[in-house]
Length: 313
Ligand code: PYC
Image 1: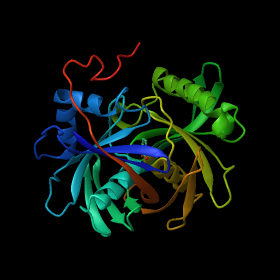
Image 2 (image 1 turned 135 degrees about the vertical axis):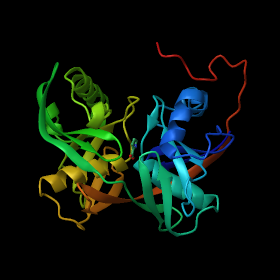
Image 3 (image 1 turned 90 degrees about the horizontal axis):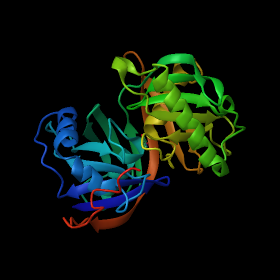
C-alpha cells in the first residue's frame, strides 16, 4: 500500500492512494459498509501500532460516484470509521496538491455523509464547506461518576459531539499539561453518555467529546480539547468539532452568519470558520493548513505477528 502522510495543525492524516481495497462504484456510504465488513484488515494495517500511532486518521482515496466530483474518501481511525473528518479533508487537499492531482480552486469531495466542497487555496491551505451541521440538544445534564452533574450540548458536525465547557469538568482553561487528565475526564463523560442513554439521531453513538473554553490565545475566539473515538486527542482544532461548535453558537444566537470564528486547539493550532444558514441547521466552512511529510509503502508480511496491530489487552 502506498500512503502519503501529512499533518493538519499537528493532527496526522494518512491517505491511502494505492493498493487499497476494491469497494465498487456505489455511494460512499455503501462502500464504507463494504470496507468495514470485508476489508477491515486494510484499516488495521494502515493505522494501528506498531506501523502507526493512535492519533492517525486514515483516508482511503476512492473514485467518485458522480461525474464532476474530484474524488471520494472514506475516513477511518484506530477504532473504526468516521463519517467525515475536517482535518483529514484539509490533509487530503494538501496531499492531492503535493501529488499534482489537484489544482487550486473549488472541487467536490464525496464522503459517506454527503458531498463536501473543497477549495484548495494554495499548496497547504484548504477551505472546506462541510455538510449541514446542527445542534440536537442544548443544555443536557448527565451525571458523571467522579465528576457529578455535567451540562453540555449534543451536536452534529459530520460526527456526533458532546460539547462541554471546561469549567463543567473542574478545569480552569485548557493547558497542554492537563491533556492526560482531560483525556480521563472526557472518557468518563463519554461513558456516562452511553450508560445514561444519550445518543445522536437514530441512536447514533456520541463518540467525540469536545471540551471548550473562551480562554484562548490572542486573536482566537475559543480553545478546545477533543477526545476522538479511539482515545487519542485531536491535535488540530477538529473540523467537524468546530462545525458542531458553530451549530451550537448559532442555535444560541451567539454567532451571526458570515462572521469569522477562530478556533484554537489544545496545542495552539488554529482553524478559521464561519457559516451560512442551512435548511434546518448551518453550513459551516472551515479553513486550515496541512503539510505533507512522508511518502511511504506499507508492506504486508504474513509472518508478522503484529501485522494487523497489537491486540488490545
Ligand atoms: O477534524 O473533523 C476532524 C476530526 C475528527 C476526528 C479527528 N479530527
